[in-house]
Image 1 (cartoon, rainbow, N blue to C red):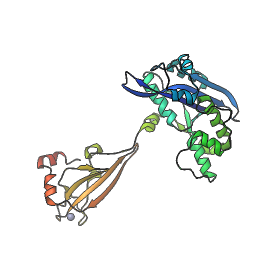
Image 2: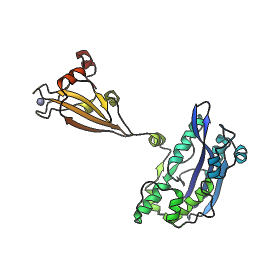
Image 3: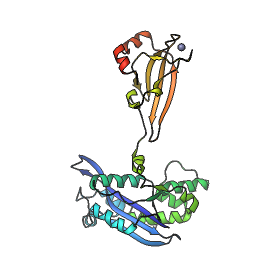
Length: 305
Ligand SMILES: [Zn+2]
């Protein structure tokens, strides 16, 4: 088994064709370890910006990459090709980054700067940040939120003195030291993700959200039916759905017993599921109900939602 610690540094620059600021990868760094966690090789490539001739000063201060170094760099596509040849990602490699934000960044960069390019080679993947945080929790360290690489190094008494943090290959060297301190083959194996799975990046970039209209449910709408609390019959919806915060509201009337109530439903779309919460609350005043009433024809049309 080989372990690859991978890191990107990105500079924020305005893209004229995209009409917005983009995080453009400016350095790709990696350290390759053998199964005894000894360093086999180091990768360090600086990318020439496609957007700007001048890096942000804060970026240069943070990473040590000057404009001159950036301008002497290679185009992003070539940097990716060089990395591919170097990493030779396969069944015998596990690639790790410090938090999966690097995966977002590289996916976005491929999309923006290499739209016809093959995906960045990652293969078997572990988020080292979450692995190290789990290791710390196991050791009884209580953590409030995600921890930085520097903080993690400090907690494991790893000296960052010889390194320039936020320089990609040096960050990878610190990651390698953290991996040595926390290494547990079984715990690592349990966390391996296959980034070549067809839905991996879709899943990574999916943002769970609350549906703002009943139409977005997109099925036959059984999720939006309410049974009468008094007799159990399915109630008839007598107003349109309207959204308020995370909830959708509508008024209902039971065809069997005439019971009136207001149903509210919260619909959260995650990658795999539609999570539904339903409540029954007292009805609106009759005047308010009339104002929101659905004409019969529309009622029939919208019966499915
Ligand atoms: Zn009823």
